[in-house]
Length: 87
Image 1 (cartoon, one colour):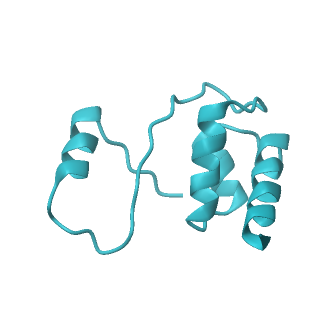
Image 2 (cartoon, one colour):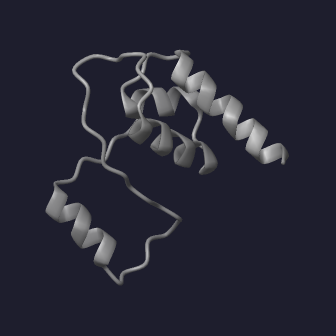
């Protein structure tokens, strides 16, 4: 997966820019983990839900948020998204 790494000032400048991007995009800031874990915290869960709503796959969510693939938080996000989409 290609990863775009920006400094905080670069990210803020992009957010404020009037130049349109070719597609819908968004970025969220989360601390980088030394190694993947299975801890569900509010920040990563909220970001994971937003990623799922934008069409990201479970493996992308796990990689970007520092979770182990197929861990409980990733499965919970997929389940919650399914429930919300059905209602």
